[in-house]
Structures are given as structure tokens and as C-alpha cells.
Length: 301
Image (tube, rainbow, N blue to C red; front, side, top):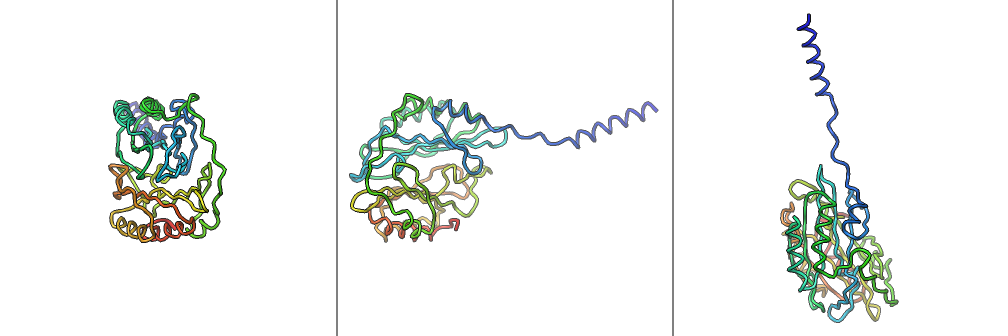
């Protein structure tokens, strides 16, 4: 009887173990602590991506003589997402040439990985480079490592950063006309810059984990008013290999400069290429050109 009772207890114990609910994954990071560690505030975006912008408001940059706003072409950022019991971060840093070596050393010594270093635009003064990075681990610790690396640059962080430059009061953009020409809606990102983003239709992953549009895996088209009713455009198309030349050909046929073509990540699936562009012309004409290029891609409708 004792043996039977003991066996029954053991059996019930095993049943309880099997029936026990699977332990939930670790709680999402305390994003306030991440903000404090990096010295900038952020926003929770679609897909539970916490994105922190670090625009280079300290720089006065021109492209082909056109002064460009920080939100137009100088937007460093960090995008965090909880993945299981760890967080991942990826982003892009806007750096002057002389800042690149020390910031790279800081990222690598802090446990982050550099995935690309390159230009986005041409004829920039002063010359600016863009450093893409990624990391996996504790979100707060990665934010601390990123801030330490950026201390080798003049990127405005914390309370001591330079305030954003006052927006010049020039002519605005006819947003409705641009949206109608593109067939897409956009948003005002500040200082007169209008942005339209277009995700790809297929799923993008890295080592089995989704790479979401809010993490930077998205076609971006920025419009900034210039003079005589014109607008400058820049941004990048996210492309698979077979789309690259079709999009480049379409942009050139419409008079838009292709200024860079490269990777941003290392292990994305499908393999992605990013094509950066520049134009300064009638905004509706430019929007129509971008629409023609978008039609060459597998983008969401």
C-alpha cells in the first residue's frame, strides 16, 4: 500500500510538472532606464520597437549647396526590441570623418558590432559618414555602451547637448499633392521635413528574428522645401538583388541621382541592398518619379 501511495504521489507530481504553464519570457526592459542610459528620449513604435532618435542638430551641413535639416538627412538612431530573454538593438550613426575611428572602437569595445560604414549622399560639406551597428544583450547595458562610444563624437546627448537649430521659415510643401502623386500618406517629422515610409511586402529576418520597419528596414523618402517652389529629396530604397538595377534605371530616367548602394546589415534574409538618392526639383515631379521607382519593388500596397 505504501509503495502504491508513493507511486501515486510521484505520478501526480509528474503530471503537475507537465501541466505547469511554460514560464513567460523576460519582461520588456524598463525603457525609462534605457533613455537615461543613452541620454535621449524615445518612443515605443509598431511591433514593440523602442526607437530613440539622436539627430545631429549640432552640424550645419549642405548638399550641393543646399542646407539640410537634421531630420532630413542627419538622423542617428537606436532601435531596441526585446527578443526572448535578451534585447536587440540596431541603428545608424551620423559622424564626421574624424569621429569615425574612435566611435567604431567604442562600439566594438562595448560589445556592439559594426555592420556598415559608408556615405549616404555626395557633395556634402562638411563630409559626413554613416555607421550602422547592431547588438544583442541587456538593453540598458547596450545603451550605456552606445553612449560611451558616442562620447567620442559631438552627437548631442543628455542635458548638455546643443539645442535644435531654429527652423527657417521658408515656403512649405503641398503635402496633399505629394501624397496624391506617390499614392502614399506621410507625416511631418519636424522643421518642415515631410517623410513617407514604405515597408516591404515580404517578411525580413536576421538569424530567424523579424526585422521590422520601425527598426530601419523600410524605404524612406524625405522631402524638404528649398527655393523657388522646389524641394530636395533624399532617403533610401530597401531592395532585393533583382530590383536594384530596375530602380536605379527608373530614378536616373527621372533625373534623380543615385548616391550610394550598399548593405546596412550582415545577416538579413532575404539579402537586402539600400539605394540612397538625391534630387532638387518640383516636389510633385519628384514624387511621381519616386512612385515609378516604388512600382519596381515588392512593397506593401
